[in-house]
Picture 1 (cartoon, rainbow, N blue to C red):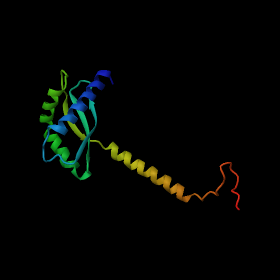
Picture 2: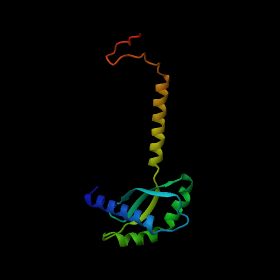
Picture 3: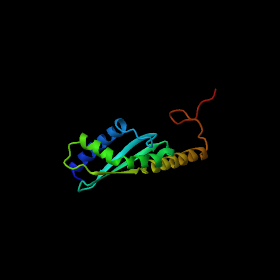
Picture 4: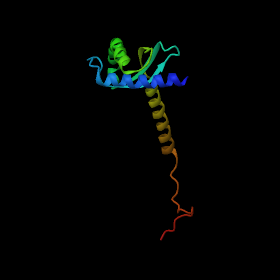
Length: 134
C-alpha cells in the first residue's frame, strides 16, 4: 500500500468519524458507532468503512441507517477533506473485534482451567528452602 493511500485512509477515517459524531441525526443510527478502519481501493473509487456498533442489538438497524445516509455522509466528507477524488463509501460491520473477543475469552478460560487443575505448591522461603516452623 502506498504512502498516499495510507494518508487518504487516515484522512477519510477522521472526516467520517467527525460527520457521524457531529452532523448526522438519523433515528435509525443508535448506540455507540465506532469506525475501526477505512480501506480505500488503489484507484480511489471505493472506500470500505468498517464500523462496530454497541450494543449489538442495534447493529442491523444502524448499518441500514448508515447505508441509507451514504450520499449525505459522502457530501459532508467531501467538504472536509482535500482530496481530488473522494471515494464512494461502503459501510460494513467489522467482525474482527468480536472474533478477537471470542479468542481472548477462550484463552482466558483455558488459563484459568489450567491454574485450577494444578496442585498447590508447598510454601518455600525466597531462597527455595522450606520454611522454618517454630
